[in-house]
Amino acid sequence: MAEESQQHQEFPSVVDRYFTRWYKPDMKGKPCEDHCILQHSNRICVVTLAACHPLLQNGKTIQSISYQISANCSRLQNKVSGKSKRGAQFLTEFAPLCRINCTDGDEYTVYSCIRGRLLEVNENILENPELLKEKPSTEGYIAVILPKFEESKTVTDGLLSQKEYEEIVLRRTNATPDTS
Image (cartoon, rainbow, N blue to C red; front, side, top):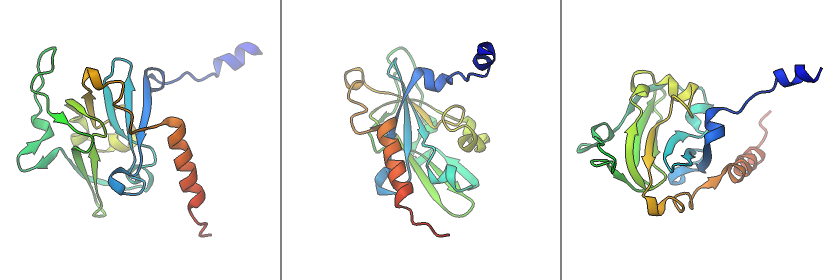
């Protein structure tokens, strides 16, 4: 009987095992536009959308995703080489990474949330935008950022832990008036 219960035991995902989740709620003052940063022990950070982001919650259809930030700045032009990551674009906490347009006219801008060098952007979501909704913390990630070594311990200072974020989400849920 004990063997049966062990067989049905679920194992943690790769993300849950090797990454620490950090959250930036209400990015740039926009309610519920929450970002999630997955921080690996080697200090690399993966920028994703938090599960409560309106794009993932409201059954929206993605029309387009663009890494073209301005006329002179495209995150797709980021060319990184060598051990010291030469050529990587340096980002601040509020640097836009991409813009996501929905068929209903809504537009969402995803920000880096941390300071560091942009190592890569996920070009797969350009061809298959549904990855962003179906697998936001794995194949549907937005970008990979490497914080400066001397800032790697403080890079998450302005972010919330998983527990702190869950408390905010719970408060939001309780604050929503019941319309039934």
